[in-house]
Amino acid sequence: MKDNETGQKRRFRNHISIILEQTGAVIAAVLVLVVTQLFQSIDELMESDLSFLTGRGFLILAAVTLLLAVSLAGQFLVWARTYISIEENAIVIEKGRISKKKNTIGIRNISNINLEQNLIEMVFGTCKVKLDTNSRSTADSTDVKIVLKKADALWFQQEVERKMEEASGITPGSSAIAGDAADEGKTIQSVSSVMREPAEYDVRAGIADIIEHGVFSISILSVGLFLLVIAGTVISVAEVLGRADVTASLSGAAAGILVAAFLILSTLWDTVKDFVRYYDFRAKRLGDKIYIKYGFFKKVEYTIPVDKIQALKIRQSFIARIGRRYMVEIVNVGMGDDHEEQHSFLVLYCTEAKLKERLSCLLPEFASSVGQPVDRLPASVWAAWTVPAVIYILFVAAGAFVCDALAGNEYRLYIWTAAAVLVVMLPAGMLLKYRTAGVGADDRYLKIAGGYFAKQYLTVRYRNIQYAEFSQNFIARACGIKKGEIHLLASTANTAHTIPYFSGDKDEFIKRKMLHF
Image (cartoon, rainbow, N blue to C red; front, side):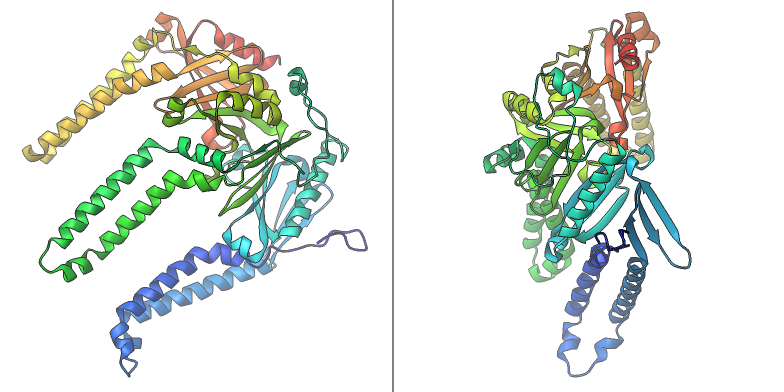
């Protein structure tokens, strides 16, 4: 893969194991189908003849297996005709022979190049390289995924980062300290950003840290769902065992029991996943980049250019609010784009003192924002909420009347009980929002607070705001309050952020700071 004697970069392919990764789910489904069909035909298999081969189940199995073979053949042809190469100022991906398609990604437009390794890749000794660009149109997914042997992946990452530095006018082997960090009075080690494995990390999570993070990450909703599924399963099993023909009942309820087991496992995993996802969490600030590594079943390595960070999120789950713990995520294009990676962690749950300490090491540009005060919602916000609240209640009442008329008297109690619950939830939600939401704006950051049971702070520097909008209904105008929305260069989930109602001229202040930073 490296330079040949002529100094040209040769083309290379993904590792062939990518075929297994892309078809793994289909293969697993076929295996389940095979086992199921063999189990159902166990009596025929025990006989001396081969009559089971003419059964409908076997024909279905044969057809599915043929489709799988065709799919594998197609994936193999795509793999064989896809080539990647690194040119002077771009990464080129070529696909096909008869109908060729060439995708050229400018080095200057690359925002992140990260590494990931799942269980299959651990077995084959391969690694996934993930490239993202500074494009809002592709911000919801990784632009390019390449599977290579681990050593080749590291070389590819280093080579691309070296060219990114050259394209940015940075001399390889040196890094400039950000001006904001210098304002904080912090010293950042100036090291070549192509250095791959830091000898020591600024932050390294031990078992106690992972357990602490897992406990404070637990969702009350997940726990409640888990308990409901357990209770429902126990009741169902008790009913089955109470029937006269237990054997027939168990056979008939097998599918339901399997579904219940799946729900139990999924809700259990949703509750405990953060105990293992961030195993051996490590983070290091080197020059103008942050290096993050973590994972047990899936190992990931992120290299985050500091100048690509659009905003900082400080989160608190309901349990964390009680325990006064905080965790930090970053918002940027290239980290957390994929659905399974929506949370781009920087600091795991810890106390406020540890949070400030770790941010001072990893991201001093935002360290002072932790203590930035947030103004609570003005009391007149209750008047501004009157109009949408009335509209909501009218829609709920209209829906209840329609359902009552269509369903009849036997369901009337359930319908109006549900409507009453929905109406009661509205003022409860408004009260929780009133006690949680707020906005703060000083000379350096805009800070937005929001949430209901959980709480989240978003801190953004004014220069990173793409554009801002402010509005008020007629009641808000009479009360002298406004609300707004800011937009960032990030994935869809992090593009738009609501500014809660505020009084005064914060909107004009924010506009001025966006234009003069």
